[in-house]
Length: 248
Image (cartoon, rainbow, N blue to C red; front, side, top):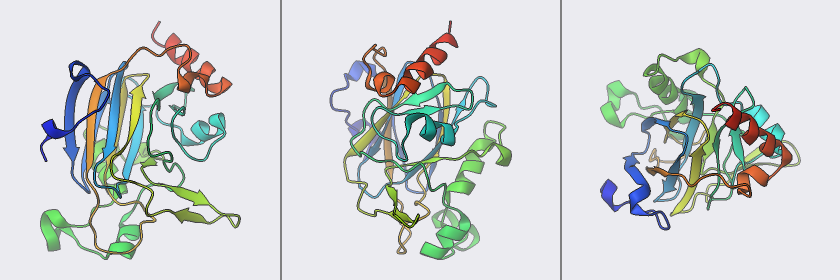
């Protein structure tokens, strides 16, 4: 499939800045400018897109997952939620989501989890078909921005659903990421987005075949007073106000 074949229903062509395909197990990063939106699309189903976020102008300000969940009283992410920095500002918000549940609890896959589920396969053995994991892919991409291991913050696993049962066990739902689902991440700041398409750490054992990601960046509409992210809770109203002051 070519990038030109990626469709965005409801988004005028004049607003679309670029499209891209990230293969399964691949890396991607971009400085998502305030006033633009990143659409992550799940064309095949079974996708896991692990992502972390930074203030591009001040990378010491970065995604704070505990505050994001506490402020919005949730253990999942979907429409109406915001992703907060450690300074209480909103890095990106979620105005649209058709998947309905994205996992903020489990963290990235590691060499150990990938080996346990799919078996070890090194670069020396398989060259470009080696078994990649999310933690190492994050470190590779962070290095492009002079960031490293100490900057590896907690991540979101987009398109993956993990629920906690009454015994406190994490339960992965393999059929959750349906083909054609998408989520929009609207930049409220100039946000460095780093992501990869490695398997979720709780993916069931089987052949190593991570799904590809289709993405596009387009111009956002202005954030209205009744925007679903702004009004979903009082904490988000304060978060938007604090973020907007940053640009005054």
